[in-house]
Amino acid sequence: MKQSEPVPQLPLAKASAHSWLRKPWLRRSLSYVLTTAASAGTVLLVTEYRSSNYTAANYPYETLQYSGDLPSSQGVLPEGLSEGFAETPVLLSQAAGTERLVGGANFIASAAERVGPAVVRINSARTVVSRGSGRPGILNDPFFRDFFGEMGVPEQAPTERVERGTGSGFILDANGTILTNAHVVEGADVVTVTFKDGRELKGEVVGEDPLTDVAVIKVDASNLPTVAIGNSDQLRPGEWAIAIGNPLGLDNTVTAGIISATGRTSSQIRVPDQRVQFIQTDAAINPGNSGGPLLNEQGEVIGINTAIIGNAQGLGFAIPINQARNIADKLIANGKVDHAYLGIQMQTLTPVLKEQVNASLRAGAKIQADSGVLIVQMAADSPGAAGGLQPGDVIVSMRAQAVTNATQVQQIVEATAVGDAIPMTVARGAQTLELSVKPGVYPTGARRR
Image 1 (tube, rainbow, N blue to C red):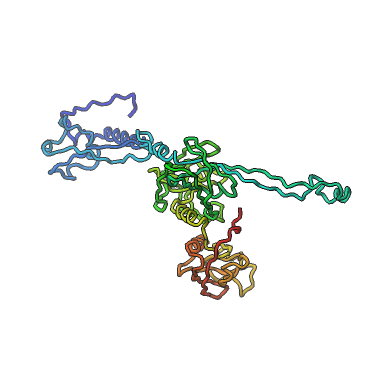
Image 2 (image 1 turned 90 degrees about the vertical axis):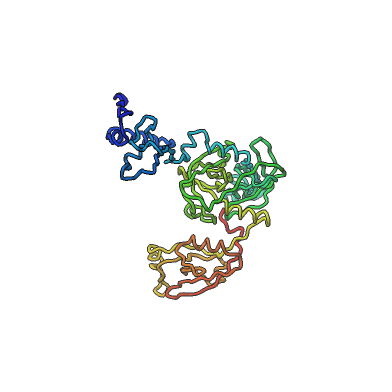
């Protein structure tokens, strides 16, 4: 209905629920109003009439769906139904995220106010020594050394420079235990923790785990504000996500979005040397957010913001808090985490890969398996080699569980204690082998930095 058209005046005292609600123009108008209200994110309430002599046949749905607009005091109820009839508000659409954002209870602001004091800025500094050939400038060129000779050429002393970085973290307990990313404090000589109230304290790195990018810092303090921990195993795509951190030096910045996906593998986000099933979010994450908390709607920590993909928008990733807490507990107890390790480079077997590999193999060595995980290379003296694995083998199953992609192998190995045997079925050419492979400890220097 256009705004310029007059609104018809209904003779409510004479109309019945059947007669005036059945007019097409009114139904269209009410439908438009209700649809517009719903799209604007408002709470939709209707009044449902209940009576002992009500039957669905007497009051079809298209009439009853607007019955909440019938003022009983105007005498519009059907004759004979005025007695014993009650009006009961029925909530058809529950106010959710959008409604609370524009209403009086902004849950993002509430979460930020509650958690913000427990989010810290972490400044780290490390000294890097550059070792050249010992001679400055062009004197490193063999021609000039031959021309001028070795006499009188001064040796160049090693140079030092200080690299500084800034990240985020959050306080786990009131006695100063802080969780952050390993890459925020990697190789740091000095760590400084700055609180929201402006205090600065020296931080001690309790332990760091490069494979999961989790680190624990300790400061000498008490009665500190802390975060509440959520459950990252119960996350669903589409839920709200709130990030707090210090991007680009802008302390306690709050951004919001949704959980875009869960279970993103390290290879999918282009960090294949990490053992994490990442949370993907479109809440804005920038350099400096690393180590800060990702929150759910209730303001509970569900992840540690850790990575972004360059030249992309809305692609941020966080370490699930359940995994991070497990790693943190081990770092606090032992200062390190021992990860199981086979020492194999692997790739999911696909029809295209099978065809490419078989094109370069002799007949007896060609891959016969149609699915599984192909071992491409083996590290020297690796636990996998000690257990009988060879390049060209296809892992078909582990622990009697069919294996169809490389991520499954990584997950099974990660869930295995160092030294515990993993039964495997392996296809080697036309042969099927049953092996028992014991993982070793992942070597610290094996991770590409």
